[in-house]
Length: 113
Length: 107
Image (cartoon, rainbow over all chains, first blue to last red; front, side, top):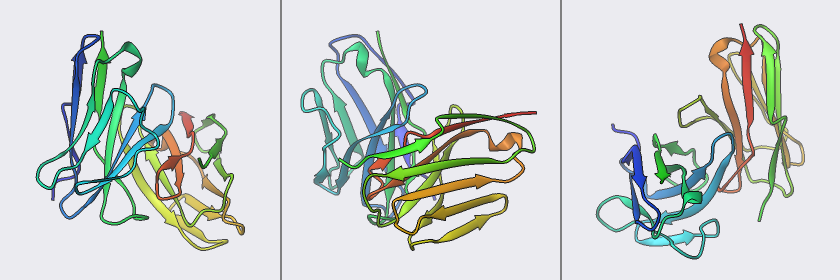
């Protein structure tokens, strides 16, 4: 039973390019969460999605960032026109139901040159 | 939004010493979860507490949920080098993680 799969593990982008981060939740999990983590800092909640719906995006910047969790396929976190400040580790987590434990992926380390 | 604060931010202990991290919320929590993140790794679920005053143990780890369900603690007895990492609490539907306590164990 595969865990939460994130890819790519490392992503390098130049300023102004787009970054697409993918997350496949564990089998049977319909809740997906995205977090951002800077070195030596905590996990900052970005967005919570269920299949085809964004439930809470209060932690996600209004501009340049978007997320989706389509009926088929992985959840995607998209960052348009990346800037150096977007460099961070982005973790995805999934759960079967709300209020249940989260299973985290290995994260995507985004580096913006 | 909800604030979940953890103290201390960093803790260095000699191997064999005890360690405690505290988690405090500005609002009442329906439940609280604890996670551990090893250096360079991803958070891994440790435990969930639901009831007021609940205490749970996992070997050398003791987790407690406050009576008012606004605070929680994680206590490690006789730390080992394998305990190294950052410990996070999370409340309110897992949206809000605490700031984390980074534990260093000196052999």
